View 1: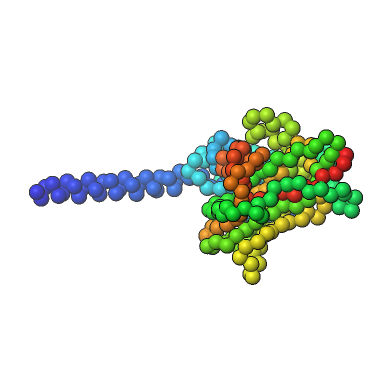
View 2: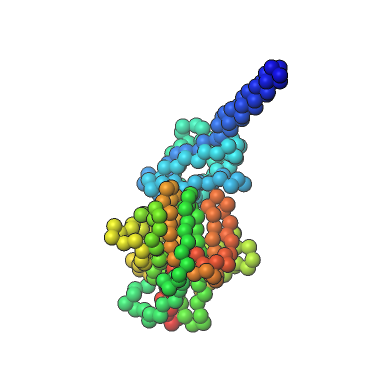
Amino acid sequence: MHLATIIIHCTMSRVFLITILSLLSLEISAETVKGIVVDENDECLPYSTIRAEKRYVAVLSDSIGNFCLKSDKIKPTDTITISYLGYSTMKLTANQFLQDSVNYIKLCPSASILPEVIVSYASRTKRKARKVGKKHGWSMLKTCIKGETAGDSYGYEFHAKKNTKLLLDKVGFYFCEGDKQMTKMNFRINVYDMSRVKEDPTNKFINVLTKPVFFEYRLDDDKTSGKFEYELPEPILLPDDAMVEIEFLDNLDNEIFWFKSNLVGGKTWSRYFSENFWLKTPFSTPFFIECIEMED
């Protein structure tokens, strides 16, 4: 009886020791990629994308360009890409980031020039307004998003009718009362030409903007539910077949984004940042997009 107790005790100690060693080995083998992303004038590039190729590992830099990407999935020989809209993508190995001289990442403006007709702006005073888009204001459905949301995106298709053009005018969402409701969030708008999209959209969406469009949400102290909208300084002319993307730029941490939405959606997309591929969603997603329809 006494001998059996000793054997059990030794076995449990061995299991505990193996567990501790396993946890330590994970920490030791993890690669850390960190630095700051700036432009050619040493100005910070906020919310740059840092991604380990062929791994489901990625991070956004913060509002002043700082980033830290740490994962046991990253190996020293892995390729790390640093990208920002309007700038050429830089590629380095994870091992290079271990050298102090490489932590200051300077991106150069991209040499590619997009067609002016796609990215030009149009004055609201010259429009023939007929707004089209997705609204959830009447919906009784309440749902939420929480956790690590930085880089996650939701997209909406827009197709211009014959002899018409669409101008992106407003974006927003309908929030509702809920425990730990989101009090603030930074978002980014991207506009894609999706004319080449057939079945697999991941590498077919072409971003037609030359620079990012950011907007910020802050919850008013006296409101628990209602409508938030962001009106662009100038409407953006969309491609005939367009996808408008709304991207979270921060994690929700302990807060929760409670919003009103329809149960069934159409022509909507979603993308988780770490996975980096688009999926068409059968359900409605949180935002609404408003466009102005104009005669061509």
